[in-house]
Length: 510
Image (cartoon, rainbow, N blue to C red):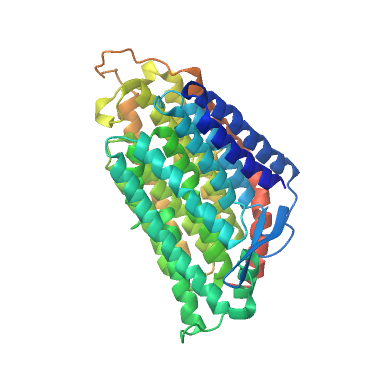
């Protein structure tokens, strides 16, 4: 019952912080957020499972209790983790604590509501990465949108209401498309399933029990449902051309919220793509391999080119996320152990690195009140520790060896080049690798202009080193990025154990 305890503790903590006085809220939220961190690390230390959550096998910390009847289907409280979900649970708890601490300086209004919503969002994220019943999963999935909407709309920049509404509309419409696609599959299965239990539905689909629905043949229904679910999750990732909500959300959101948005929320899309599209409908996924790989490559190159043209540091990091998530899609569609495993590992690596980058930009903004590349110069002289960590994070984004980003991209490229799902996969992979050059170009260009040279920002206040509570989260993130780069097996071993049954379950897809 540790998963239930983890979610419940986080919910109770969010309520406690919400009722606390503003002057205590930040410290109280940070202290209470350490409980989920301890719980997730305990799960990691005791983790012993080899099954994929949707294809059978031994799941860790699994609970399944009948809950209610809905439209003739049984709804179960069904939670558990495998080697794909557990790393994301650990990422969520650690990143939430660091984001809360980093918010102590910039958030000076309605702190109890802000930190309460951060913890409320964390509780729902834990539900998304552990729920195995579609109804339960969908409740958590939708509940994540509400705190993010208010965190952007209340504590954001001048155009916060526009950005919050755009975020909500995009993701809500996407959820509707995904919901229609999934429900069509459930109805098409008819009497083959009696519950909304995701493992049962996945196994029925992969066993070929999908029938026609309202005269629509099973093959057509399978393709239509796949496309609907893919569109729904692709908006959340996001991939080109569904990415336009992301830069606005990041630019207007406070930096700690951007940390959670890029570090964890985007992973909901790729996690769901893996759980639903690529696990439940593997044959359809391989049939769509060319358009999906093309979307991945366009996201990598176009996202990087857009980042190259930006002047706002936050917007640069935001567009670079579009590019990085393209690599994750490429790994998933490769359908090899290294491809899918590398994509999962890259979710963790990108969560840590993008969190570090957004947090660093936030610290610089707190000191200078600007994020514009053209306004800054010589920040290395005034904030040497922060700048040093930012430079290290940027090299991680570029894929420097012995950092987590290098390991993730290496696994993906290895898996994608070895993929035989389509003859063009090596070509798609080679083109996508060009994105690394563009990433290095815009990051080096931005760093050279803002960090080095003589200090020229004219202010009526002193720009100096960041406070300890601003630097400490950056140091923890950088240490974790290096640790996973030096020892990727800390996570990649358990990821492989979960991915192999998934690939075996589908037979020889290539």
